[in-house]
Image (cartoon, rainbow, N blue to C red):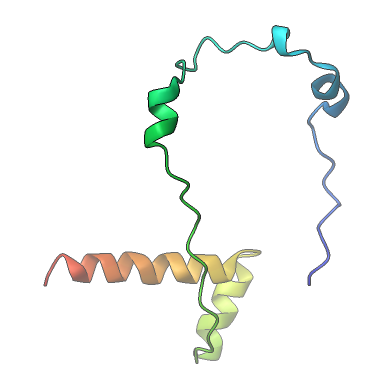
Length: 90
């Protein structure tokens, strides 16, 4: 497991959030949820990703890695965009 990047300090005022009372929270932009909503609600968990090995040219892999953290996610996104564009042609 990779170490968490803790160099960036959170800008969230966690003490203020911890001390916040329910009555002080503005819910005006949230529609009320009734029993009917929860009767129809379904829990949708994200699909687990498959682990696999893929062979890439060294320069391709180096380029993605040079883009910084999340390069595997970017490769997946690019492959997904390609897949979806090809589906529309079938």
